[in-house]
Length: 328
Image 1: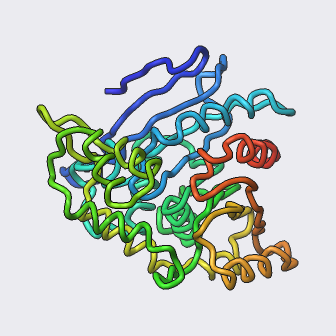
Image 2 (image 1 turned 180 degrees about the vertical axis):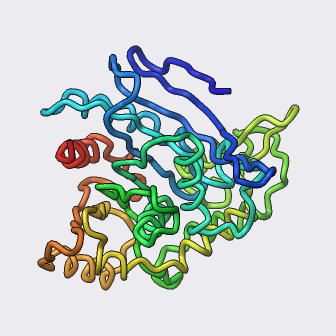
């Protein structure tokens, strides 16, 4: 049953996890999610957007930005009513441990979960999908699978796909800072039950991790009796991270499906981008397409590191709002 609550006046959220029935007698529970939308007299919004978080993140990381985006779109010209669906990807947030989200724990499976969520709710297919970091690759896989017909004949491509500071090709560990690998290796050595959030933050900072990163990881804890445990499934998350590094969506960017625009947002101060990757993106961005294919555009978010919704949410909002409004 949905839990519905008011976060701010005029904005309604609902938290849900749902059962998706197959033709057999077995049922499978799909992803947990939250909804955010601006006030409207319409029972069903005109448009919908899915928001996909990154590795070791959750839907709640994107609540504030999604609420502000819905509000911004409702007052932009022309005004439009949007539903934002904030998804907890498999092994993350309230989706961690749900039955039915079986291996393999990889990017294609995560994208398929999103499609199953649409079907289970009887929704229209989303007009826009936004994905940050690992969620960006889930979004790319979702679009590619839609275009191939993997989700059935009823599936429709999103009109826009936003890939937020996510490298679209194979990620070479030698070309990264290695921070994520260090975090995962460290978490493997931490007890399954943790005395408190403060203990975790202090422990991680003493190991050399930044205070901000340590506190963010602390937001992934949940109460377990007198102690706390991580909300995510660490072993499965490591498998998802490996899949994230291995998946290659350059072919999709080279030949985007007709009727869809892919927007790659590179954070100006992000450490995730190797020069040869940015150069390849610039070539794709400058390529003149024809009517038989979709469009790819590349934009740089100034004054932002990898955490775009935290470092420069206003700049990101000003970048996303007019383009999303253009499909109305």
